[in-house]
Image (cartoon, rainbow, N blue to C red):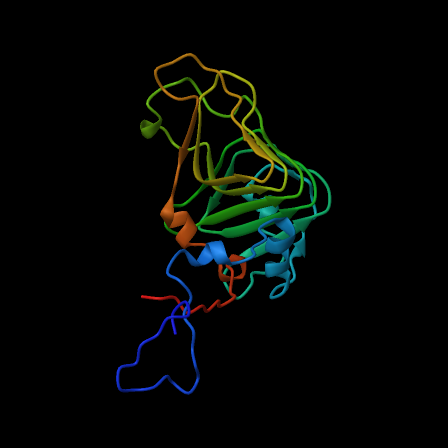
Amino acid sequence: MVNGAYGFGGGSANSKNWVAGDSGVLSNKLSWKYDMDQIKGRIISSVKPSALLISNIASVNDLLQGVIADDGARYLQLDGNLIVSGNIDIGDNKIILIVNGDVDISKNININDNNGYFAIIASGDINVDPSVGGAATDPDTVTPNLEGIYFTQKNFNTGSGSNQIRIDGAVIGMESVNLQRSGVSAFPSEYFVLRPDILMNTPKYMLRRNNIWQELAP
């Protein structure tokens, strides 16, 4: 049966009396909540994050703590504000930071293409220092300043300044993404690049694992 109308010719309905809804987008028929609690709950239902022992990160070595989960990633949690004060080369590591507070980033964060993975999930603001970046130029010719997934339950702030910044990956600000750079140039002050390779490398405990089934009319 489709929307109450049916026709079986000389036959009859299946004994299950399956009903297919109208054709359309499945997602607009579902109640969906996407926030830090949902993401954090998804993680801790399968793995216990290790406590991040320091709140000022100066190199990747400061993040190589705790155990590596069976999906190949390190899950770290900090209760309080986080500062990234040095250039961080994640390399081929896979690191997810859960921060119950603000995050202040004053240096570059980079990963190896097709292998590394980095994500910050923050309950507070993620603030990028205006010094991150450089003089305006063709952004396709420069190394990204930030790579990875940056999710904040509040605001992602690019920092008020004239330096050009390039961010590869994904930026999610549940309240806002504030583009605060104001360089005067033919090139953009903030340049975002969607990187499917980063998204495809997402460790399994970061992924939504619920299976949702709904019959749709062809």
